[in-house]
Length: 170
Image (cartoon, rainbow, N blue to C red; front, side):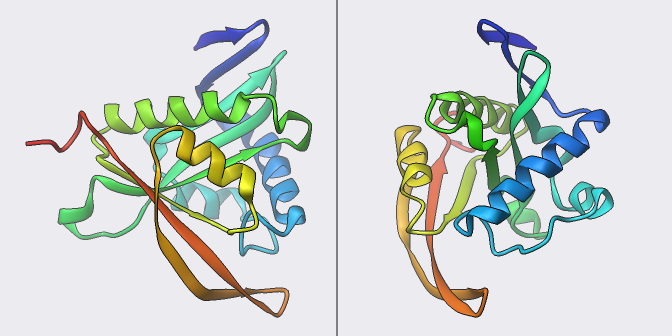
């Protein structure tokens, strides 16, 4: 764990963080621009979905104010170093530079765990998330048109990716 600003720290997610992580995920669901999910996963579903070694939380005064995690994109051996990322901040933490610190830490953690490519699927309307990803070296791959329905409306998803300059360069 390291101090970032005053009482803000990033560290690995603990079992005891689950309820706060879930609440932040619910806030993301409620925005309508963060996920296709309309209900949060159970703790068991969440644990099956995300890579255990790459789950980070950011805390302010001991309270979780954001989280980031990776999920594998495939079970094929050739893609073991490619993951999709999720990053969520509490609504009170948006616009303060906290997301950039958290995503940067996730990139470093992913590389320490052998990931060479990170992907992010972002609703095009989520301009803040697009800007955040671009600020840390993600590029736009393209639009996945009408990828899924949310509340009965077909939604596009911008696919973004970042290729490591230190992992998988052989």
